[in-house]
Image (cartoon, rainbow, N blue to C red; front, side, top):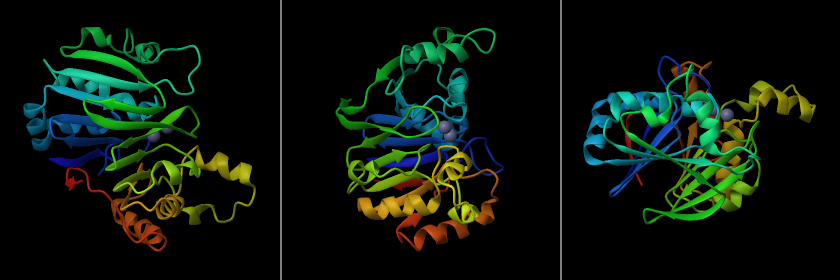
Length: 265
Ligand SMILES: [Zn+2]
Ligand SMILES: [Zn+2]
């Protein structure tokens, strides 16, 4: 069984309809979770409970340490009692501080309590850029440009997970031919049409990508499908289809993920 379900697809803060980034990939006996945003709360849903009844070990892969991607780690005590949780945390681009130290700043008194006090067994493993085999699955880690160090993950030829990134071109090679590309689509390029100064534009995009740029990269990389993620919580649910159409005019096989729906891989 190879499939995925998005528990979170929004950027920055949860909206009325979407949680922040959290994508579950179930590959036979493995349950991989891409980012631990507020979507982690959906482990309380029917799908989430069923997954937890099937999997004793859950591997979480963090793209970076911004709060909207790690806040869901604080929900583990509610849902994951007795489970083994391995957090793969990037060390690409970090200097002098280990992932466990970075996470330890938040998960310690007085902000929270330490991961060692959780009712599940939490292990943090630093993961470097390059190719890895994790529980028999090929996982490629690629650094990407954001306001802080961030990485993309390629899971076999099934998924390329690329959120919180500027739309730089190395993705074309790294995501080449992948079945599904989930890409940062935080903004609509048309909202920035009047900005001619590239520096000003970079500032306004906050290290993110537009849906149009995501579509251009998907087309150049020859992926099967593009899913737009890290959607702006400033947009209402009925405004996303217009954004989708703009991306589809560049790359027709683009979709807007619905949270809580299985997607076959
Ligand atoms: Zn984010
Ligand atoms: Zn970020």
